[in-house]
Length: 243
Image (cartoon, rainbow, N blue to C red):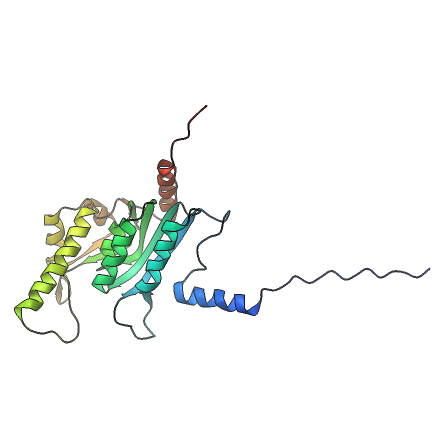
């Protein structure tokens, strides 16, 4: 009687090369793998790191967050019924003012609970983004630089240029004061303070001071941010009718 040979176990199938390439490209471009699938998580995490890139493309050696990548993600989070909350982590030096305000308005207009967490830095136009969420956290050692709107490159020295800058600055001030606990007078005082920044006017605010001034809700880290976001998600759910 001949011995029947058992078929060798099949080796685990590897992902097609195209799928791997798409995943790597998404990680390189957006810093993440995409919106979580059903069962993976009901919270989506987005990062704002490096310099916020707007209408002008920055050199390749600059670490940037491209707002044309962020806006479609925010739309997808709003539309995706599997996502119940959004966590935004910031470590940014700021960047394009209009791009930063566009992201801030998008975050503030989401119908789902949002929490921001400033790690390292949330400077310049990163301040409105940090205050745009339903609730905000800042690490104890993190900082936020508040300063007037500035232009780089060729500037036309006419009164209209100043008026344009002044109106843009008012947009930033109005947004921050409307979405945080800081008063307009205090925010302007921090913005135009002298002697705090080298060769410039403005203020560098550290974690606990950001909370004291009302810019940020609470000092905390990732654990506290996720706990608060889950609380907001539970509050946002419709009350179940008990039979």
